[in-house]
Length: 331
Image 1 (cartoon, rainbow, N blue to C red):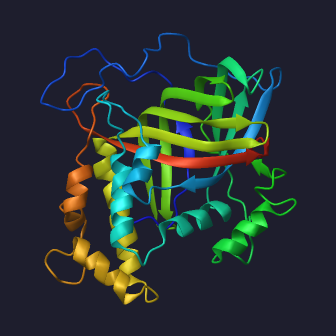
Image 2 (cartoon, rainbow, N blue to C red):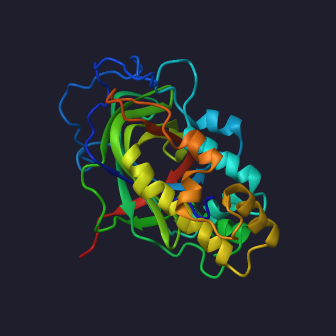
């Protein structure tokens, strides 16, 4: 399902997504899990205030149903964690055991194919009720030259002295990075919580296929110290338009590439065909993906956070980050 998952986080405004509109159509609704944000847009100034800077060094996609619960969020207030896309990833991972999703994700992150940088303005990383986080898209960087196809070797290169994720890595902000990916939050007992906010999220599945979504109700949490972020969780909901126009076409492009790759094991191809090839022609079309049981079960949308009657797809993944130096984009 996913051959290389990495994040590039940008903002599409940081306003709260909650609404007081009445529920309709039996759709799950946000029943008050979000606090309305009526204050001014957040600002960040790392030249005059204390900031810590980090780079995401690991992304963790759900491999099982319990994983999906771990990284999700209860968006409709019904005491059940929502993570529909995480459940899709877990279900397909189980069905296609020949494709090691997490190894592919690790290679993408460790190889520097997509870099997510974070500046966190906080007077104290133990307690600060008025913390601010800004996310940047970093320029791609060759973090493990010659070991791009070796998960263990690539990771070892990134954490070696001076490596990308050793705590000494230096990264440059991409020229295309959004300037306003700024989110309010707080830190208590070393636990950070930022959001909700609207955030643009890019998920490269491979070199030819990237999912671009505009998350509503995005939240970022984890345990933070000056050395990094542990047990991080990024969650949000994907609008239906992004599901139809970006998520499902990207999945189709990815699966089609796997099927056409002469190095793909026949058992993996058989699993993909059994999952999606309903007419038995040894090919998988976009319509077959859209109409597959697992996609119809989850991708039709499971929440409606803004109560507009349009279903949205919940998403949750894990992450970790380490200390890094961030430099401005060069001309």
